Picture 1 (cartoon, rainbow, N blue to C red):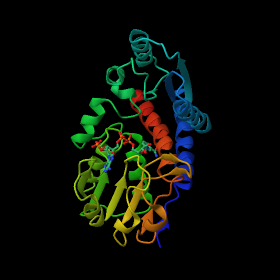
Picture 2 (cartoon, protein in one colour):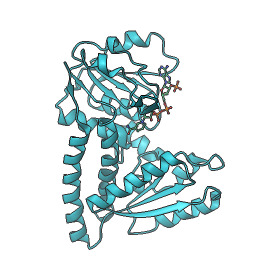
Picture 3 (cartoon, protein in one colour):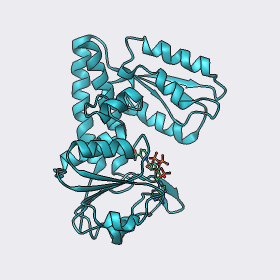
Length: 282
Ligand code: NDP
């Protein structure tokens, strides 16, 4: 039976550490680290994420600057806000909550963010640094998963890792981070053939798909480490991408949904903000 990775507990521990670092930053530089959170429109899920991020900032001594813009906000107005935040010395991190309304080009907006303030790690500069093996600000979800591997002393060197999903925010950066730790990585996606066979051969499985229970428990090799990024709202509540009840009989370590990867994502946002703040004063 697998050990269940406790993302809430790990997150609590890590936030304590961030809180101490944030306090000493504030004392040393006579200002708190600051995160600007920009929300355009009224998407209910985005509004919840933004609220949670703000609350997490308040609880760790990071100042949050809140920009809630009307759904009809135009390109020029949003770009001009980003420019203003890029130049604001009290703002260390800028987060533009995605998805943006359809009339706005997310890629253009993300490109406008100063890479040194890009605490989501989505700017091509930060992505490129990760690709070349010299990461700066790393996307929060995969960064949180790496933190889990460290905490639970998961050996990655030489292991066969399968990442299911190739998005820019999870799958691709996850694969790069695993490769940096010398895992042999296979990236799977919607056109992958024989997904079951690939998962069955993996020592480490990261599922970032967005389809409940797509990864069957019986595919998990005995002793494998299973990280479930999926967050799927179903009639039975929030579910992951992995068939947890069966998978936990095979895995050595597994994350639950909820209470696994999710809490660590916001924690790593705080971590990135503090990292950015330190780089701005050094
Ligand atoms: P995307 O929709 O951007 O990417 C999903 C990926 O899954 C794509 O690469 C897609 O392949 C692949 N895929 C879809 N269907 C299949 C299939 N049948 N077999 C194999 N691969 C498939 O999603 P995200 O990466 O943004 O998010 C993935 C999940 O993680 C979602 O549930 C999301 O809510 C959750 N999430 C959770 C976070 C957390 O903090 N816990 C943070 C971010 C995301 P293709 O590229 O070919 O289309």
